[in-house]
Length: 319
Ligand SMILES: C=C1C[C@]23C[C@@]1(O)CC[C@H]2[C@@]12CC[C@H](O)[C@@](C)(C(=O)O1)[C@H]2[C@@H]3C(=O)O
Ligand SMILES: O=C(O)CCC(=O)C(=O)O
Ligand SMILES: [Fe+2]
Image 1 (tube, helix red, strand yellow):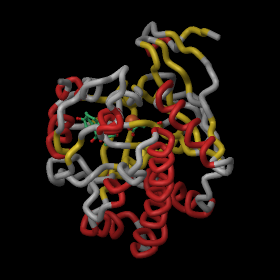
Image 2 (cartoon, rainbow, N blue to C red):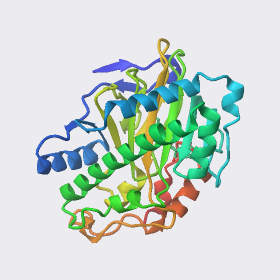
Image 3 (cartoon, helix red, strand yellow):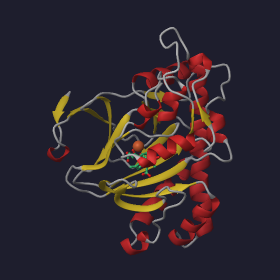
Image 4 (cartoon, protein in one colour):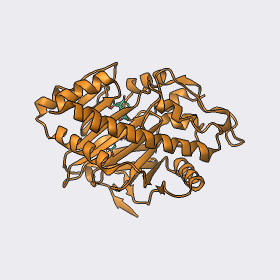
């Protein structure tokens, strides 16, 4: 079905299709194959029966809504530029290079000092916020991300099935958590077209639409929120490590007039010094040579932050 896009989102077409939903409780080899197929065809899929306890999700969502309901002056105190990354609170500005949108966000990294600073400002019960809310959520989604990455390696036939998980399991992994809050506004672009630079993203939102993915230039597919599911998308690094078999899909978020939307994203990233390169098993008769040169996550991250949101940074690393 093709319908006209909202006026303020220019002239692109919005196309509805059913994206793959993968039931993690089904037979392992079948699940692994389905995940590989979805990662190749869409770079994006939903997982259900993920076994993350609902109270861990509810506590995190409640903390997010409580935070965004605070006065602007209080939230603004949490803006920070840590290690050249815009961590903490941001409103309408995305990154350092002039990208704007109707989103306010809270970006957290795993460092104890950062979460501890944020916790004392955000919550009257910092220890509860830090350990029982944020850390519990992060541990749970990280475990789910590892399960999915193991299934991907199995489905791809890579003998070392922990090839991807070792990066995000690592104590120095550079993973991030991000709350995005979209106020109810006439349909407009709130978080512009981009791909996620890391290995894998696990995203969920309250039951309000807004996320769209692009499989073909100019065609946008709305992703309907499913309260039972986590949305999973392939990041740039996983596209590189699968030698282009998996696609790091471009996506964006739009506002709607009726309801506020809040999404929570986990970006699974390797340690800064990790070397990113496709393993030999990814070389096939169809792709006999490496499409991307080897690089470290530090190099890739530097390129990411020096560019605009919508830039295709991965192209800088092609052979
Ligand atoms: C404009 C930018 C914001 C961003 C860093 C960048 O320079 C380009 C990529 C952006 C992005 C998109 C996915 C994630 O939300 C994010 C945290 C990331 O790792 O890359 C953001 C960055 C950000 O908002 O800091
Ligand atoms: O809010 C959303 O659905 C998308 C957010 C997103 O793409 C991001 O945080 O990188
Ligand atoms: Fe994203």
